[in-house]
Amino acid sequence: MATVSEEVRVRFAPSPTGYFHVGGARTALYNWLFARQRGGKLILRIEDTDTERSDPAWTEGILKALEWLNISIDEGPYFQSQRKNLYLGAAEKLFLSGHAYACDCTREDIDGRKKEGSKPGYDNYCRERGLVPGVGRALRFRVPDTGVTVVNDIVRGEVEFANVSIEDFVLLKSSGDPLFVLAVVVDDQDMGITHIIRAEEHLPTTPKALLLWQALSDKKLPVFAHLPVLVNEKRQKLSKRRDRVAVEDYRAMGILPEAMFNYLTVLGWAPKDGSEIFKPEKALAEFDLGQVNHSPAFFDEKRLFYFNGHYIRSLTDGDFVERALPHLEKAYPNLDRQDILSKFVPLAAVTKERVTTLEESVGLLAFLFDVPFSPDGDDFQKLIGESDFAESFMRDVLEHFKQAADADGRGSLAETGSGAGSGTGFDAELLKAVLIQCADKAGLKLAKAQAPIRVSVLGKKTGLPLFEALETLGPREVIARLENALARLAAV
RNA sequence: GGCCCCAUCGUCUAGAGGCCAAGGACACCACCCUCUCAAGGUGGAGACACGGGUUCGAACCCCGUUGGGGCUGCCA
Image (cartoon, rainbow, N blue to C red; front, side):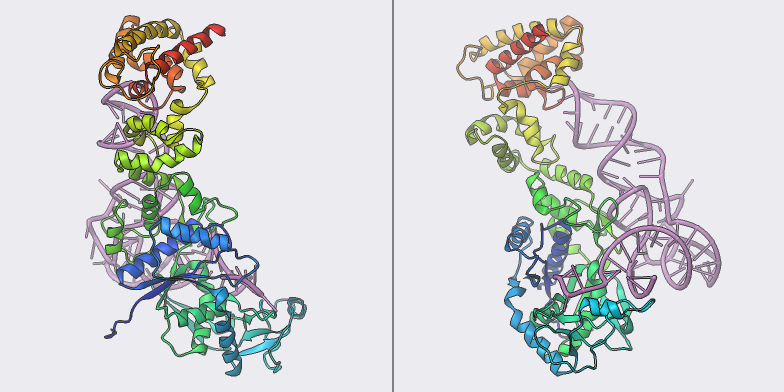
């Protein structure tokens, strides 16, 4: 056991070559958890040495996503594109020490020399040619022909690679630009990284990094942790192109960051007591890299949505309104915030219970804001058009609603028809009593009787509780919609 | 093809040799609750890939097979 505890320094090192997806987010999260519980530092490093594919816009997305998830960065972002001289210096050092050599082979040259059954990869053609480095010549690392390189991995134990199976890999392109293998090792040493926590796909290149690390300096080797990859329903590694799993997309559809955080945490790890929905503090206290699962995990949206629904329901009504409001404002850009709030707030509690994403609020509340309002065709036909009681029942209800409206003082002649009732007149309690009375008279159960009223006024056969919705809509609008429905029925 | 990783219900997992005739959660089905829909409650169906060892005893350890995945770029 070490007596001197060194500071833990980990890094999250994404390449900005596309949408930031949930796999990257999970890697960042596990790095964050590890750093926080060890009192260490999390460094963000943008690996943009591939100038062809990198784009600052993607970096911006990564930064925003991390902030949204509440994954705080202690240092950085550092950009590899700004550290080129460091890599070039290291490359020169490696050449001078004999660890690297210049190579002028093209892909075609190498393939041309390849015979049936020969080993894949580079054939070491230039190893002893003594070429001088320069433009048009790549720099390759001289990999030992014997021995094994072992990767010390917290999640997988010790993984051995025979050095013969590793080809003399390229450090510098023939253009003179450094490649990621070099940049990564130089940076990890320069930044004092102690633990490298990343996706399993990087495991095969790890022995190269280790060989390079040792050739560059005698600094203590880092400890690795290769996390299982996240896969799609076909059990293939999540891909930015193939799978729609951008963090930004989930944010846009109204996934709460705390839900995403929680779900990502338990995707590959579980606390001892088996609980699954918990606060970040619990993850911080109990997370254990050594307990992380070894096998690929399917990113199951259904489960994410379940987590999200749970988190939404645990919000206060006020918080829910605040979080969902942007989605409504986006859907109804012509409405003032106050117009939306005046109708949304009274229904927030019952809406919250019924959505699994914030975005779904828009659909549930559409009957309040859609202009012109028009009931769903199929539902109208089925529950009103084909009903043998709907028309007469609706007429009866309409009459009674009008009476309630007159008593309320906000009747069909009132100027405004919106806003919650004051508890007298046209309110949920009374409307329910009225409808039950009408239903009794017609010999109907409330469940059946409410259907045509619901479709006429709320537009669909399912949705928010009817009476609260009617109250919020107000007498004028409710009566108008019932009359419209009757007219539509007559016109058929 | 080569190298490497992995293997418990459809999915995420609990399980570190006896407490497992394998537990929880999502999804699914049924019922209850109920003004619809949800939410919630109760119950149900559903897994240790296969074959050899080791051991008094294996989901757990070892070997093999099969299956899946990753890497195999002068991408990261």
